[in-house]
Every structure is written in structure tokens, then in C-alpha cells.
Length: 257
Image (cartoon, rainbow, N blue to C red):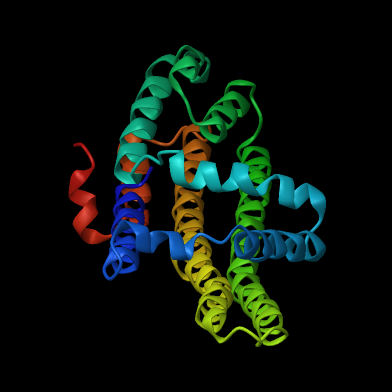
């Protein structure tokens, strides 16, 4: 997992847990355990998202999130170095020599591009195929981001719904004043769950997914430019100078040679 994501979750959860236990100690944490509120907030948000999106999109949400958070993207500089190595090999020994490198390629997008080049497709065809695939992946991540944003919108709303349910139940039985405080506290737990879920989980994850999508899109554009340049037989030095345009000036020094 991305280190900043891991540290952010650890810091946020740590501070909230500390605050919850600050007054009553560990027993104070029990005040925030409310299965009904948890079910209404998270289950209700999921139900609303299922109404909002197609079931096929909802089923892919976990996969999209896991790939965004757990799939390590190479840096653009590392990818340029690899493309230059392939370009050098192809220029010396021909495009078919790239087949020996396919087993070393973990990225399916890059592997597909290289296979298209090895199979002899034209540069325009290779570019068209890869651009379509990159666009579909971009749309898939955008849908995942939108779903997380909707979770972040619906969770506080269902937290308020749970709070209203608790208030109605409390106000319907005012015969015992000693139970009013506990009833009010229990009702407010739903609001807490909704605010926590939106601002500590769903909205930050949506933002991270958006950033990862932008990084992956830039990397895919770099790969397409490099693969098409290799297919066109351009000199490795020229390819390197072209691909450096994808990097910030401070990052260009990381490219070998």
C-alpha cells in the first residue's frame, strides 16, 4: 500500500481512538459501539450506491480500490529507462528480439503493446488499440472514484437518519428521565459513524483513487509514445528525449544516460 495512505489512516484512526478513550478510558470506547447505527450507516450507504450504479460497476469497486492502493506503479523515469533498453535491443537485433523480454514485463498494458509490435502491426494501429484500452481503464477508475464519492455523500445522510430514529425512540418514552442521557448518546452515534466514514474513509480514498488514475494515465501515455517510437524504428536517444517531455525538469536527471 502507498506509504502516505497507510500513515494517514494510522494517524487518523489513532487520533480518533485516543479522543474516544480520553475521558472514560478503554470502557469509554464501548459508548461508540452501536451495531444498529453501523448497519444503517454503512448498509444504507451501500444500498443507495447500488441504486445509483449498475451491479456490474458495484461488484468491480473492491477490485478497482485494491488495484489503486496495492498495485505499485513504476516511476516515469524507470519506465523511460526500460523503454530505452527495449528500443536499443530492437534497433540492434530487430523487433522480434523483444519477444525474449515479454516474460520480464509485469505490466499487462506494456506487455500487450510490445506483443502488438512483435506481431507487426503498424504504428497507427498500435497507438489506436492502446489508446482505447487506456481510455477504458481511465473510465473504470473514474467510476470507482465516483462510487466512493457517493459513499462519502450518503454515509453522513444515513448517519442523520439513524440519529433521527434514535431520537424518535427516545422521545417516545420519556417516563424514565434517567434514560434520556443514554438515549441521546446512542442516537448521536449514528451521526458520528456517518461523519467518520465520509471524512476518514470514503472521501480520502476517492481523492487517492483520482490521483492514482492521473498517475496511471500519464504513465500509459508515456508507454504508448515509447512503444510507437520503437515500432517506428526511431533512435533510442531520440526516443529518450521525446519521453523526457513527460517529466518535470527536476525528474529528468533520474533518467539514465
